[in-house]
Image (cartoon, rainbow, N blue to C red; front, side, top):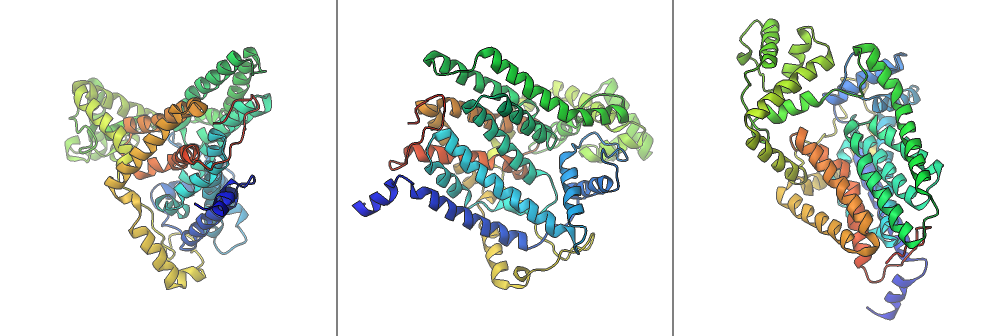
Length: 487
């Protein structure tokens, strides 16, 4: 490397910032290409969200007319807001897809910012964005009306708020942590226990600084901040808790665990494939299924979650009661063969990272179930369509082998953050978050790319941070007011 090139990389206003902007622009162009192809058909979960947003538009903000216990309100509210904002246009889908494309790009930007905060090096932003540059599968969800894109953006905002709190431990930053956690929780409840690794992370940072005499915040103030953040989360959840109390007579956020574990208990393949247990709860479930179908329950598709759930609600149970009965029966079945259940659970936790992304939403601009999507220049341009088709055909996520290699690389990058003294606490925190998502998902779900895509930006932050530490020409920046040295 000659002196001119070396000077280029060592410039104090590191050219990595300009390169990061260039990479971000390339990602934006890629997202714009996919967004221009149009929406996926509004079916399945997308159809459910669309109907909920219609209730909100009609004035039923808490969706009381749809007595279900397995949804949270943020995405239907956002969908309704987008539709209202687009009410003067031919189709609201254009505005919705542009909004979701913007949310995806926000998650990319936040991944870069999180990498900088973790590593203390400005080059981490560039490496994180380079890690996301080849990503294709997650972008296909820009045109699908489900909560993943919004959830990922909120999750990244929340994680960044936690890091910022450790740098600037004020009541305002603590309240921001609570606000972002509450919004993320009300989008997808999987983050319900994410506060545990956060609290451990904050306390480790506090006591490590206390030993160095560099932490100006007293422990009593930290606990005050924890209480403040908790109050904000609870305050955000109270309206939805009250809604469920009024509809079902109980206070809860969601009830969906029974349907989840029904799949992993009775479905073959990734599930345990167990038999129906012999118990009072199982007998009640069978009786209710027989009551609705008029046939022997064994003749129904009883291993299918929604078949059983729908039959139970038709038999007179409300939504949370049906879910709880399914949970009881599934747990009783698990107790009959715990070894098989444990083996399949561990395998699902590993396959969270390895499963192929083969069931992705595809653009369907001619879908007429709802208002049509206006065709754009890209839709008519064969070159653009060919580019998208080529990238989609050769995407990495469809290969189990490639996903396995990526799993190993992410694991090595995480371990390196733990190994490096300057990022050890961050590495342990990020590792606990990645383990959290893989274990929670592996316990209750059959592996699917849709569940893994939510941690893609986090993984990019990990890889970007590790590469910036290894890159010899990276510029150091001390981002921590507590005077921790960024190596």
